[in-house]
Image (tube, rainbow, N blue to C red):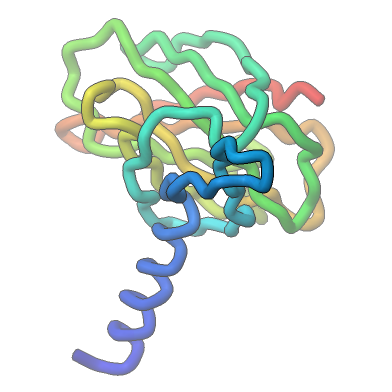
Length: 167
């Protein structure tokens, strides 16, 4: 294994660990609280499947859209969309019998110029239509930026659609 490959494996392991649910720690009052992990930027890489939870905070529903043969619902975690940071994104795909090979998200313009596409993973194996990742917010953030979702199905067919980010 060459040095670059080994470095990529280590980096991927560290990034995956950032999205996993951490064990609950007792507080001084004797109750349990879930510690929050710092957000980590994500490039074209998968996130680890994590249990469905509110471990990233309050959710902002971004709405529903038809993307190819799929009905898609999207949400993001509450917080400012700041250039150079990341945003936890979730989508749910329904309504098609097409086999999904991959789902990618990016924030920016349709052509993805200046953006990094983040490959999503299924959030919870018990809910195979729920996809999650952390999308990198480009710096600078182009005017009119949106959340873009690209769905690749068998045969290499790709379709994409967008959602307003809602402040």
